[in-house]
Figure 1 (cartoon, rainbow, N blue to C red):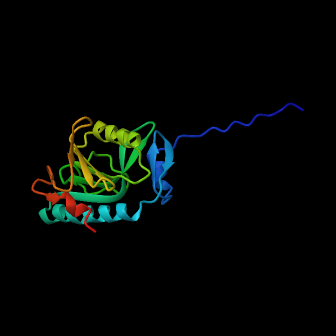
Figure 2 (figure 1 turned 60 degrees about the vertical axis):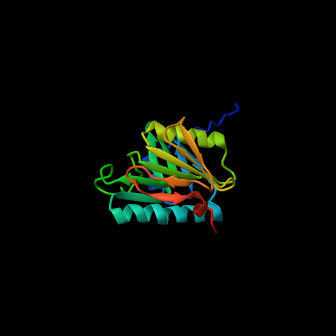
Figure 3 (figure 1 turned 180 degrees about the vertical axis):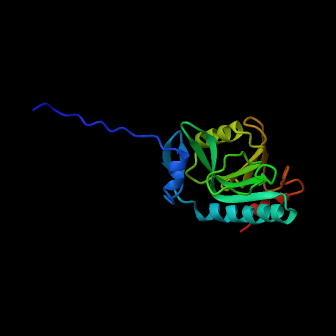
Length: 187
């Protein structure tokens, strides 16, 4: 009897298929492949909530747009689909005139915030930085709890480093928003 070989072929997943799967836990879709992520730690969650309350409150009070949190899915590209999960993102009403979509967002936000976890590597973060700016994100804040630092990117190659003695300042639609960096890490 001849030997039979079994081939395993993995089929790429689309963004629509990922959305239809429901809550499968934290993940991103990288070129059609689901990449699982560990749940966030306590400090990560605390910083995300702090920023959501402050940034979200600022946006809501001024009625200038939307703040979304919780690994909100943002399309980076299609075919194969790449969807990144941002810790926090901000859109103006002009960018999302119909409000937040039920599915993953297909419009680049003005601001994305990523909070580093102990397991995040800078090589992985570098790819996220490139992905976000490839779709036209205006500003990216990378919060590093270990170093009590915020890296502010206005492009993939232009970075400002803010420490606990500095103040984080928003740009449109967050013009006028300020936050002493030390308050992000005050527990």
